[in-house]
Amino acid sequence: MPNKKTGQRKKAEKQKIRQKDIRTARDNLDFGKYPCNVSMECDKCKRKQKNRAFCYFCGSVQRLPVCAHCGKVKCLLKTGDCVIKHPGVFTTGMAMVGAICDYCEAFVCHGRKCLSSHACTCPLQEAVCIECDREVWDHGGRVFKCSFCSNFLCEDDQFEHQASCQVLESENYKCQSCNKLGQYSCLRCKTCYCEDHIRRKGFKYDKNKAIPCPKCGYETSCTKDLSMSIRTHKYGRQGKSSDEYDDSSNTTNDDSSYYGGNNEDHYIEEEDEEYYESEDQEDTSD
Image 1 (spheres, rainbow, N blue to C red):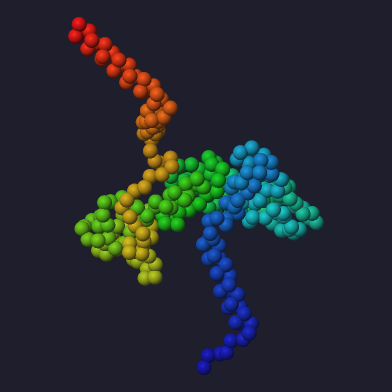
Image 2 (cartoon, rainbow, N blue to C red; image 1 turned 90 degrees about the horizontal axis):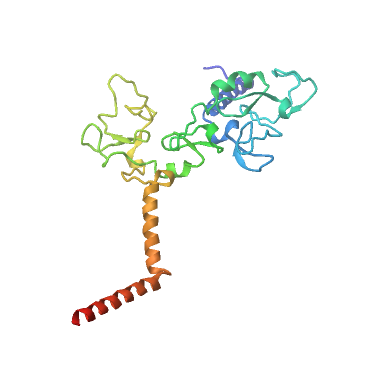
């Protein structure tokens, strides 16, 4: 018979499981809930933007900066790991600031843990929009991730990209290596693979995890579970060129001038032509 667990033993095991869940939840945190990517409103121009040290529009410094790592506005630690010691005094504003992140353009507090770990774990290190190729410093909005291909998106292109992300680059749903129907689709490469060509030789696959793409390593999904399409949709800045717009505008102007307020001039020109034709006929008869 195994020994019966005591109450203290049960409590220690529950605490161990709880700590493990907290650590895993920190890695799987929603991208919009990171302190360096939260929404901020400027004190002077009142425009909403991503959390940053200086306003993107007017360049003013915020009255109460938010730490990009821990998200605190006020340092309440009397005996903590603060680089700047302030015993018995609560610090706010610039007295709490220790550095500015080069990636997310936000203030980092003077805590030793935040200063030493934020630059290495900043989630916006490679946050370049997949549509417009702009970084965090080039646009004033927040950064998002596509729910299908997990690529970075700016605030201007997030909805349009996700609406047209489930589109294949081929004309059918067949595998890239054979003519079989592609059972697995990679939303990053926009290609389909059959059961035979999705697996690589000499590679060990986990049982309860999705099969990675043989080309890019991104997790694949079943094609039947997705709304995959082979039709492309162009939108916004990626739509028609300026020349096409100019041509369409010219045609509309010509039509409007013909059917609009210049109809009288058109009829007058027709009457003049009939008048000259009648004069020519009289001259020939004489």
